[in-house]
Length: 486
Image 1: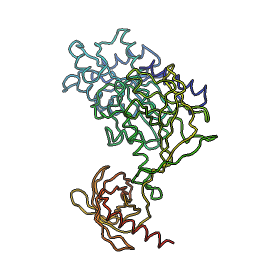
Image 2: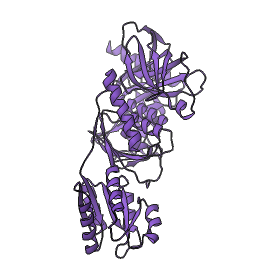
Image 3: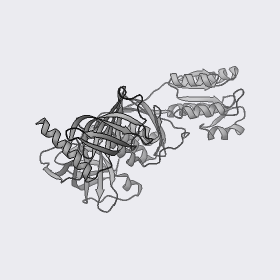
Image 4: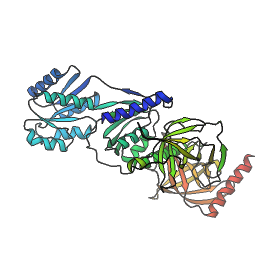
């Protein structure tokens, strides 16, 4: 794992130095390693501590005689390796080892047993890297201990987005835990043979945890060991999740009443010349690319740009996985979003690079097409309504923004004894009387985004009851509001 990862990161750093296109990122490594020894027998505990200390001056040893002490130490200190006895009083074999492996899957763990020929298979089945025989005295044991302690943390990365790192791991088929830090908190993503199989943040796990983590900006990522003990909760392809994560992030930003836009209709494309202009693209931005010979859309990532000359993008994983080639000279369609606009352009593949990484050089577009992806006309609003959840429970709300296809709604604690439990894609019904035109409306909507705070819940809704009479009523209200404001 470390050789492939190191070569990949080395290339990115060289690429940054050569072309000045990447934001600087840093890789750190700890020289001193700390080992936790979980052993109930005092004499055996002391013997193992002495053995590890003699092996290397770069190893710090921390003792623990039971599960509770081990857990406390692991939560309070940076531990790089666990040596755990397979036998504790009043417990079945390997039980403590199993509990530690499940709770701390990002720390390698070794079993230590009086009878390894009996316990080895059980220990490895619950997450151990292996099982040593007591007493520890073999130099090979020391080498294994130090190698695993070194492997526990392959480095810390800053300046590369999480989605970019995950794509690298997917291409390389790596297995690891990613410990992610940001101003918003911390969480974990577990990668097995290149596949994201689970994620954890706060009380969330699975895809919902992944979508929260992928939305964080300016993250610091520890690349750590993974013992394969997490149950797989994620089956969706990585590219699909990244795109969904970006969509949710955009919707979360759109909750601002000044920029709410829920519905998106097809509009006529506008055109602009790019002569002497720089595309509104950032290094690391995900692009949707379409090839004439491939029905599905593919994903790429911008890694470099020289305005008026060319763009440098990663080769879509489809070509890498299927071992097919992108033809030099063929034209593709590139799409991306920026500032609530959808942009697209045709570009010719001017060069295909296979080493040290698979990249495509695209001719810089002379013309770009775009359209505003906001939907319909909207207006600020402030009138009451009643919201009912699927179980029929009513809640008092206030419209803050409305259009013929969606609305922004606020539910406050002051107006309700309790607030509803809500989630994305949940259906709700609304009853309200439109002021200015005095019309009663019954609406059905689906929750597209929401934001909670200490005062209440703000909901972004998309109406599903879009029949002509409804649109006419809301448009009459919008017209009346506009007329009144003039």
